[in-house]
Length: 410
Ligand code: UD1
Ligand code: UDP
Image (cartoon, rainbow, N blue to C red):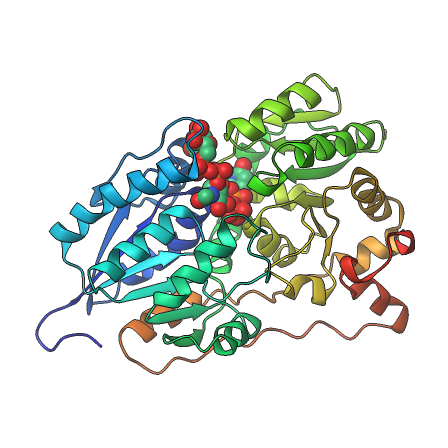
């Protein structure tokens, strides 16, 4: 609740690309709330990939830290973050700290606030795979943050159930995911401006209009090593199809950039490109036939854009799109990835069913709900759209891949 004679001082601390994308619309909403004095601290866990987002959303940070080192380890990063964030809390003296998701920046910022007895609000609370090693270290980070948070902004009913089941102390609100707010703002900007579309499309003038587009992203730590070699193997096989072209904006982590460039560089049908700014990446997803990813954010965005998404993980903390039939888990086994992608390229009916637009993650109003909760106003919670009624045959495709035998795949 805002104090009687002064504004509520809210410090949002974040440091990576996805946090910036998902916090950007919230920062805008906080800034336009008269009862809130909103400040931003950028940890610098990411540099160029984060700067692109700040530029696009025109965000200015009051505190900019510089913790990124090339190929940083989790422990050196964690230590650097604790050392850098504490003086900011000392100087800013916020009433509340907001963090997002499950990165090391978010975990250390939340813990640092906790150590100073500053209430924490966790945006995107309650996501769980149930396996502490997947994703790693994110499942541990988000559980830690949830444990100490006062406000748990859970995106969906499922994530709310998770925090209630753990009997956490914080107060939970089902808000929808702020990524849908960011996506809606961005997609509307593209859809309403033909000139902008033409300019964005110019970046992709290497695309062949006769081939359908597979958009790929991948960067998870638990896939480093063999996982990435298997992903590259699958993409090499898929690249031999003459009806397909692959665009892969490669994450700057050297553990990703190295193997991907070594094993896929120079293949005529595979376009390895630098990480795109958010506007360009949303446009690329709009142009896609199918999206193949291990990313959390992309799993949430693709269903909203009506794009089938295959998820290169064994388990997901985002089961809603799998249940809605627009996402499937394919892990990193090359044969399973190839079969999953080929099924969607070969079977028009399957593609049609899977490409239905679904919004299980939000309705674009998550940020205003979070502001209402912070101000102590009643919160009109998010209720997901139910997937449209499907035939019995279609129900087969809605089952999570993990629950079906691989041989039953198309
Ligand atoms: C981090 C998060 C992960 C999130 C991902 C989003 C942790 C432990 N991991 O993973 O949860 O899904 O961001 O992308 O918090 N690098 C650059 N420039 C950049 C960004 C990264 O060069 O702008 C390189 C650096 O060499 C850096 C390395 O990537 O050391 C790894 O960055 P790091 O933030 O540790 O891990 P990510 O794999 O990016
Ligand atoms: N994204 C982007 N440019 C790219 C690839 C992805 O802007 O070249 C966006 C994407 O739309 C999503 C977010 O980055 O919103 C996902 O970030 P990432 O995959 O790095 O992290 P994760 O979501 O897995 O934590």
